[in-house]
Length: 289
Image (cartoon, rainbow, N blue to C red; front, top):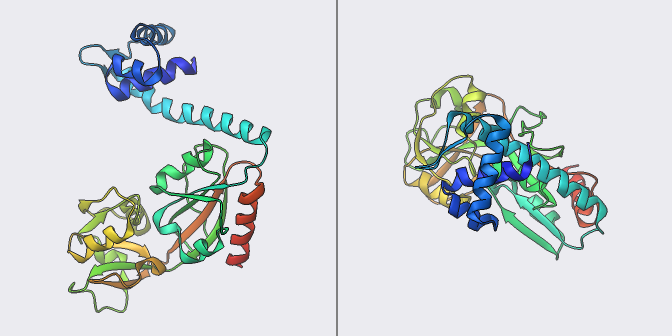
């Protein structure tokens, strides 16, 4: 499949409009229509209905393949360009909210850093496509086990740190005075669904080997203070690394005693490290040791 045609199709499907897609891509509407027709002819299947503009079953299936395919192409281009270019003087770092601990922040160079806080699921793609030189991702894992990251491109992951996790509860919660909590005892509790900031509920289910952990409220932001405020107000519990939970007003952090899991942070990069990126990776290795 021609990737240009595929990118046009993804844009039309996302915007549900041929004219809007033409405006975004810088094509004429006629060119967009020709791209879609050529792709449909190549595949021998209708991909979109026209009024309204929605994917057909075949088109929906193609969309599932298109995202990873286009991301791989962007990642390949970014890596080749990066290898051919002179080393950058600055450093672009993408970090998940809970991955940027004080120790990591202290390892950053004093100048020349552009830091972007992103939901953790967006960081591998940002590194793969060159939007960031380095990425800091985090998640729940067994002690010393690597994180399970999406296979978006050939990326290298280095362990940076791991620390205990705590359950963040409202100060008046019946369990707030416990010295420790078992995850299995919290299956039916109200939880905050904050996949970009707190530990995703899917990871809690996987760690506990069961269903449950129903979301009471979903938070799609990346601000840890907002997450703690929602917990303090009684909208749901959340799991956080011990260093991040801190002394958030109106909350209590109770250690998780079972299962035996840790909050792990890893540094992501594509290809060989050079310049400021290599220096930061070396500094983080020193910090870890």
